[in-house]
Amino acid sequence: MIDRQQFDGSTPAIGFTATDVVPAARTEGLNIEAVGDELVIFECENFHYHSLNPAAATVFRLCDGLRTIGQISALTQTTRYALDEDAVALAVAELGEAGLLQQPAETFDSRWHRRKFLKVAGVGLVGGFGIPVVTSITAPSAEAAGSLGATCSSHTECDSGCCGYPGSCATPGAKANGARCLDDCECATQTCCLVTGNTHKTCKPIGTC
Image (cartoon, rainbow, N blue to C red; front, side, top):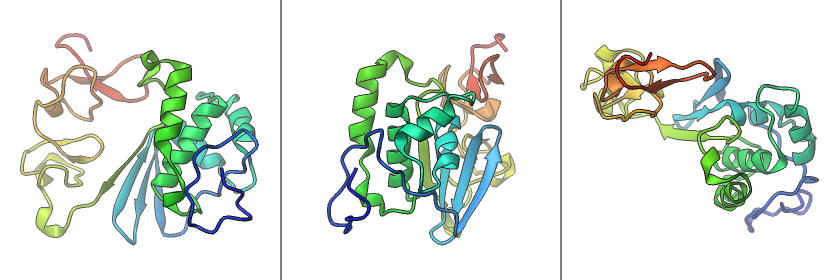
């Protein structure tokens, strides 16, 4: 990562190391809500929603502007979502790209960290708790309310009649088994349930929940 004392905003940071100090998490202008072990963050100024899975949320909470990648990794070892330094670096890059850290978004590159992380961890671990995921969407205008992808809190708000994960209008029956879901209406099998060991619902075969 670029030395923050010398940062001029003109050159992107490529990779973090264990001794790099992580920029502090943003709080001003954000509405932050905990949903289980995840975080849902709404940017009031530009109407952006960000969904942080448990790994990314754990790192976000530890970004105080003083801790290094290595120190954050060490602190996660006492949580349910122990992360190595590569996973923490990926989380920081994703948070930075989403504009959730106090450093310009253009100075982060999550693609470099994701390639490095998967090379070390193995593709077979994708979807596990150890991989940080930050999903960002823009809230629709009033004209688009109710259309696919529009933010919703109930089925009646959606033209499709299906309000799904992560709180947006979805196409009924479009998701295959294993996809993350919020309601039965999203799944091809009409079966969305919480499986033992997970903190979120996924589409499952009929009769397996």
